[in-house]
Length: 131
Length: 236
Image (cartoon, rainbow over all chains, first blue to last red; front, side, top):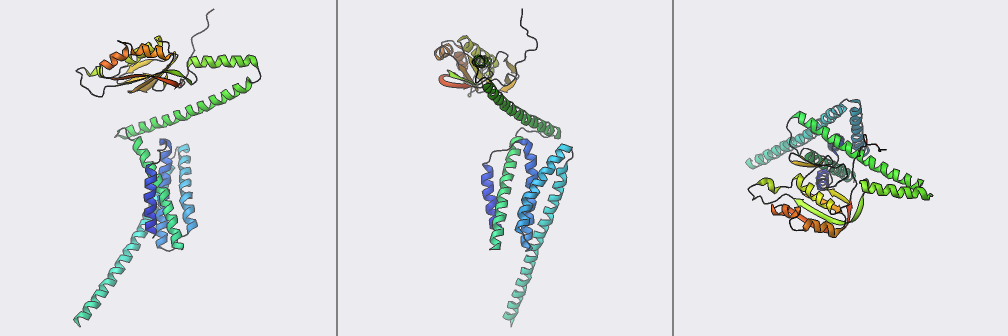
C-alpha cells in the first residue's frame, strides 16, 4: 500500500517535473540541497513506518523544515564564504544511509524468518510422507 | 485508516520530491550543454552564468525604474501646458534616439545561411556582416525610421561588426537567421529591396535565404544600453 503510493507519487511527479520550466542556475544549488533534505525525510518516513513509530506531524514538519533550514544555511554559508551546505549534505546523506540500513535489515529479517518457516514446514511434510 | 493516511502523505511528499528532482536535473542538463571537462572550465562557466543572472536582474530593475520615472514625469506634467509640450518633445526625441519602443508599418526581412551547401565557395553561402550592412544601408537610403536586427535596435552609435564566426551588433552576439525589421514607407522600403540587382537579389543568387514582406504594425524594441556623451560639447 505504502509502496504503491510512493511509486504513484514518483511517477506523477516525474511526468509533471519533465514538463516544468527550468529554473535559474543561481538557484539550482539551493534546490539541490532541498532535494537532499527531502530525500532524507522520505527515507526516514519509510523506515519509521516499518518500525511502527511513524508520526505524521513529525514527518511533514521534518520534510518542509529540513528543506527550508538547509536552504537558509546554504544561503548563510554563501554570504559568509563558508561551505555550510557540505555539513548539511554530510548529515543528510549519513542519515539516509542509516535509514536505508534499517529498511534493509527489516526486509532481510523478514526474508530469513520466512525461509526458516518454509524449511520447517517442508521438513514436517517430508517426515509425514516418510511415515 | 491510519495506514492509508500515511501512504497518502508519503505519496504527496514523493510527488513534490520528484518534481524538484526533475527540474533540477533539467536545469543542470541545460547548464552543462556546453561541453567542459576540467574543473577550471566549470568554475568559469559558473561565473559566466552568475554574471548573466546578475545582468538579467539589473536590466529588470532598470526597466522597473524607467517605468517609475515615466509615472513621475506624467504626474509632474499633468496640470501644466508648457511642460506637457516639453514632455511631448522629449518623447519624440526619445523615439528618434531609440530609447523607447516604437510601432508602425514597415517591412520584415529574413536572411539565413544556405541550407544546401553545393557551391564551390562555401564563404558565399553564409550571411556576412557586410551583407547586413548593405541591407541596412539600403533601408536607410529608402527612408527607414527605425531598424532592428534580431532584437537589437540600430541607433546612431550602433556598429555591425564581424567577430570571427559571429556577428556583433551593439556589442551583442547575433547569428543566422537574421530577422530585420524596419519602419518606414512600405512601398519605398519594399521597392528598394526587391528591385532587380538589389542586395537581396545578390544574397538569393548565392543560394541563401532572403525574404522581404510588408508587415503592418511592427513593434521595434528600444535600445538597451547607454549612449555616452563624454566628449561632445555644443559649439559656439
